[in-house]
Amino acid sequence: MGQLFAVAFGGACGAVLRFMVSTGVYHWLGRGFPYGTLAVNVIGSLLLGLLTEALVLNRIAFALDYRAAILVGFIGAFTTFSTFSLETVYLLQQGHLSKALLNVAVSVAICLLAIWLGLLCGKALASKTLVGSSGLFPCGIIIVNAFGALLISVVTSLLLPKVPIAIEQQLALIIIMGFAYLGLSGLYVLLYLLEHGYSYPAQALAMSLGFVSNTAACALVMWLGWWVVKACEHWR
Image 1 (tube, rainbow, N blue to C red):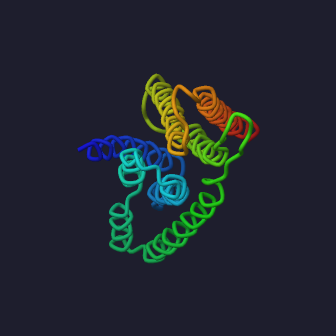
Image 2: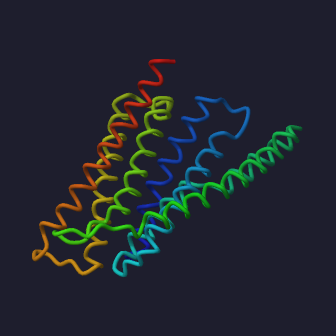
């Protein structure tokens, strides 16, 4: 039952984020081509490859609900094969054969490339650790989490302003997503340390260091992503 609730929660978050990303892309680039669906599928494929290695390679036994919420619920709802199929058929029905074929070719090729790159990066980073006087430091997991924070920051900075909702709602969504991501990514760091022999309160200081380092890194990367997007828009 716990996994069902986890999948439902992750699916709700993924569906909301997919709506925001695809709607923002369509308002930005228009509806002459399925840009929105392509964007969510490529982003979702990259995240699936990256997080499959980060979440499954480490095999944290008591984090099954956590993995189900992210890999099955969130990414399953964020990506969409059915909408891709429907939009391709619509293009064929409207006589846009070249666009339909391009949509199929680009979607398949880029999504496969994205998931392959995600798997490579996840495998290279997920198991990387540093061993110091305070114990194990999961630098690889923190880097993976920081990449996710960067992606969230860039996507929300670029696309959320283009979604037709009030500015107050946009700010509320940014705050909710930001704090939710910081909390969940920090939780995974703690689960990782517990699985690798740490105990509370005996090693509370080392666990706190991992949590705080992850929070600081993700928050800094989020701010940098937002700043870069705004700076590029200003220079343009």
